Amino acid sequence: MLQHLLNLFFPKSCAGCYAILLSDEKIICTRCRHEIPLTNHHLLIDNEVMQKFYGRIPLEFGAALFYFHKKGIVREMIHLLKYKGHEEISELIGNWYGTQLKEIELLREVDFIIPVPLHKKRLKERGYNQVEGFGKALSATLEIPYDDQLLIRKLHTKTQTKKDLLGRADVIATVFEAAFSKEHHDKHFLLIDDVITTGSTLEACSKALLKIPGAKISIVCMAMAHS
Ligand SMILES: [Zn+2]
Image (cartoon, rainbow, N blue to C red; front, side):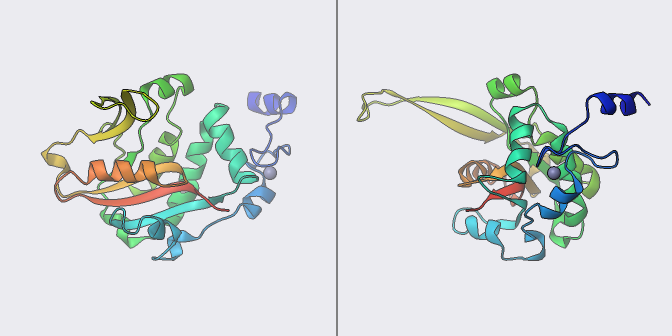
């Protein structure tokens, strides 16, 4: 009743097009739900995500749910999720994708769902990791544990002996490390992130995980940049 009254005075709007949501619509309206650009990657073994990482990392399975365009529903949703505090969008996308990915046989042998970690500073600013809700929803649907402790993101300052062309002596680089123990040996890790663009962060994370003996990697993301 209270929620009903609140909605009356502060109606929720669609994260895709800002139309007022009906009482049975959650986060995005029915029209946006039908118009959102789906990749259908889960239906193709040799899809664009797999192709993106050819020759970079050996992937067991790779997929993203939506196409991310410079304008449109997906961009609006991701923007609200990352910069406007709408953490609930993460879980919605996870539940959506979870029902599709449940059909993928390869994913039944996954042992851990691993989110791309945020810098501590960014985590403090935002208050949440934007992929956590997505990962936990996938974890519940696929019945695979979610582990946000294994992969660590570090800012690494290298002092170089020779100065570079700009005269800077220090180079700051992001380094990922896997804090693994024997229980992580011979496991299949499902790495998750929001949007795949160049894939360089996912590549760096995968390389850190591949230092674990017998590790296998799969990647699932909310969206993939598409021109
Ligand atoms: Zn809409």
